[in-house]
Image (cartoon, rainbow, N blue to C red):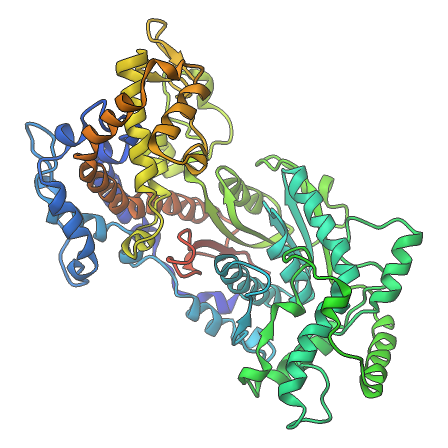
Length: 601
């Protein structure tokens, strides 16, 4: 397609060059990224791995944004570690190399603004949503992600003239619901959890009941500000048409509800053409009063539903009643177009979509923070199914990725559809990252830099607990490791879980954890437990500093995972364009990069 030729993307040679740089740096720093903080004190990790002071690490972390220089040369990483002790000795060079090898600074991403500009002719004159009111419905992070990704997917749908979207790992259905209601798309939300799809169906039923009530609240607030200026307009121009909620409730009491549809016959909406016209009219006059509200699009159940008496705050005027009557009559003339169908299925690379979606047609496949192997499997499905014309995938939970070459001694693990590596290029290198390093990749540099996202105290508690397990109870190895255990080592399930958040003190945390491990916590007095705390509290800054080093490496490990996926797409023959796009604010949403790919129409 001619327009795709104007989209910039790094050459495959540039991607390969960046991968090679990453491999060299990550191999050198593997001891740090692969270290588990649970064993931080039992293995004396700081002393064995780092030869600079904790204070210097904490100090340089606070200055790391100032240290970055876009014009610098490729850093010489040969002097970062001591050749004799393998300890980190050059902190400044370590930070410089980490910055250089982050996805943000490698220069491999395609700006989202460029994509919008290139594909602008297919937006039919529509503009992006200017401002969204979300405080009543979602946390800021989720609404930020849903709004931005929905706008992006809608642009792709317009390019191909596609109305069907497949949302893999749909979870609670926020993205799917938004796409179906805001952009008039038919969305299939597929999730492996029955709990999630059941919850999505319940939200659908609530939406049918309470939609009118929510819209009344939104309209009441909006009209109070607008009535003096625009007497003829009783509804926000860019809101969806109302549904007859009373009829919906009466129908539900007498007939079964179709759980696979977001809207019953009583919940009809304007045609796509009319919705677009309404959006066009509103976009030309954006003001605080015409701010688009999630009241217009989000599923009920995303917020606690108020009672009818609380929500209906005023008696409708005759003009309002007539307006609603006209809208409901008009809505009944149009076939149902906004559909969100939650489906439960465990998706693999071999999943046959026709078995899940009987009316499968040309579609766009999306995934918002698809967990572990689902992200690479999304790309495999996309490349193998001609019906899928485009994909926008934002992965997460890298620690759940399966790795083909992590345990080479186990031959049965060398076959199948693995999460990493995905590209033939890295498969030929037999490259593996390791679970602890993939855990490190989940850390969020931007969040930690502003004082968020690193649970330092809980990590400290867990590291001291491991000392107690070893010294008092003889437990020296964590049994949930995938590596075959030695029969001579006492094994125990040492997954603490959420005990920290449920504990009132360090002593309470230790006792609850030991009981979970099946150990007699009374072997230690409160004074003995606090003795361990006081001893290692003096070295807490070592643990904090070491985790800062891991945070520096997180963007580099993530970059390798994402470049592997991009390289895989470049290896395919049926792809018109592929790239990495930074969709989200990394402070609000640390997993902010999308793998995007487009086929010829």
